[in-house]
Length: 181
Length: 215
Image (tube, rainbow over all chains, first blue to last red):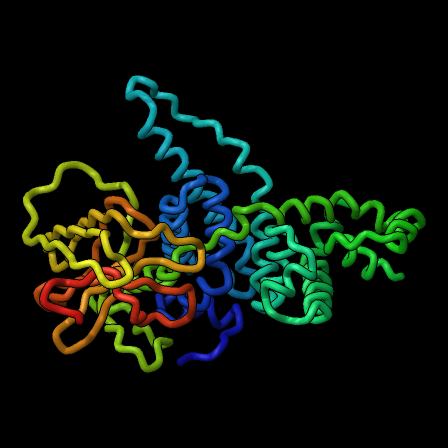
């Protein structure tokens, strides 16, 4: 099994279609790509097609991408474009053939995607334990006590994990706060 | 209290008097408040927590590898230590409810046998061999709808025990899937119930099995 690769080494190997490099790139960015696609389109099947298209298009364009750069914004741009294409393709299938409108307005679900990408990417840098506590707090709306009961761990452990997880998230997403300040 | 502590607690929703007091006297933290609120809304959005099917990674790997090396084999599933999943040129896609157009008569069809844990459920499969790719249409009814932590996985198995995953689904429906092997080489078609974990091999929970196989 190959070990962890730096982004630069990963991208160089990704260019060749190396299976382990594709797997690792997917491991780092696949969920964020899926988040963008799923939120845009609201359909799991279509979103998964967009994920496949995104990585395929990224591989095709990898020769033109500087591996010294952060691949996140590059992959985000490809993912968003693939989601827009999928949306318009589906929309065209549904409208009457006589309606030859070429430009299809995008719904509000396409707005604010960059923040969704950044938040999902930041979550994927946390440990599984940290992610579980964040999910329990924000998505499931559980108190620390309820989380502790469900996970079968002491409340103090939940509190310390929660604090550590939120501190890391705040650090990882500091640029979003600075941009809007 | 530092700004970092204040913003961490605010993000966590732990807004007590100390946080309020710091915010009141700190222009920097006040200016971050709306961004932190947006992040909290983002974290509560269900779509953020929706995850792709567990086999999507291998579908992406297979697709890119196949395009990068069209005459050869895609990369091996090297992480499946100890498993007997075949390293074959497999591209599996299940599209729920997206069975396009009218198809010619199938090359084969089989009514799978429901396992102990799926009594009353049924699965009928039709298959075509097209350019070395097996295309299958599943008509599944009576299975328990699964939540985000589990899925049903379709397997093809060779007589020597090698498996290849042919896709996944989570509820009743009509599904199509394609995989780059011939059923003559992988005659057993079966379905297991899988937890979302790192084990890419089949679990022991058999939902449907090919007649003549299984227990």
